[in-house]
Length: 257
Image (cartoon, rainbow, N blue to C red):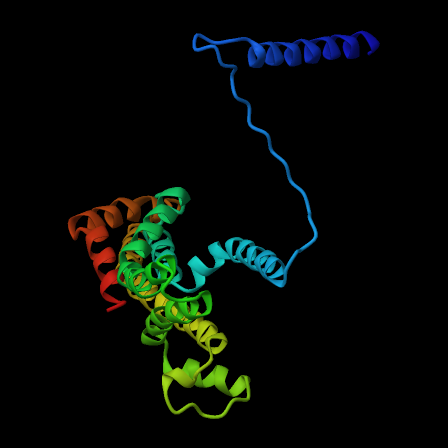
């Protein structure tokens, strides 16, 4: 063990000396290789604005950690990934397409569906803020408006009424009177219901094929042959003949209009 420690120390010392020699050795231009210097420290605030800037950075880091959840909950991703997952199970091949492909397709469909909303946020909130025309609070208020509009358009009134009653709020007169913390869960459960309704309609034709194949095998006395083994090629053939991916993606995108 002692020999190993000495050997490791010698190797580490050699690496340090090599790096130092390369840094100090002159190049063809007569200058040394620049090495970055990183320093992290905490200094006393000289003004209240310094404390506010630190709090803003902390809040920004917190938002970045919540970004995946915001992408999933406040966009069309929830409905898309659930419908695609139910489609995969309806076909009878839970491993195909792989999860990476399914999630990637759902993400790009989400970017496509949410593009008008994000363009509006960029035009009305981000660009004016970057140009110094508005402050952070106003930029945030402008950015929330398109997102709320998208969520309210996809949310059922019954779900909104549920969370308004659970929050013990007065009946809102307009959509602008509904708090955002009420809109978000209402939108999520509406998306779940819509996704399961679409999944049920997807399951029906594949279920019919399974029933027909099972009845045929039972009438022929082939009880030991798994029906899934026979129905799977027919389901794949049906899905390919009707151009299933085209129909599913088209239905998903149009369902948000």
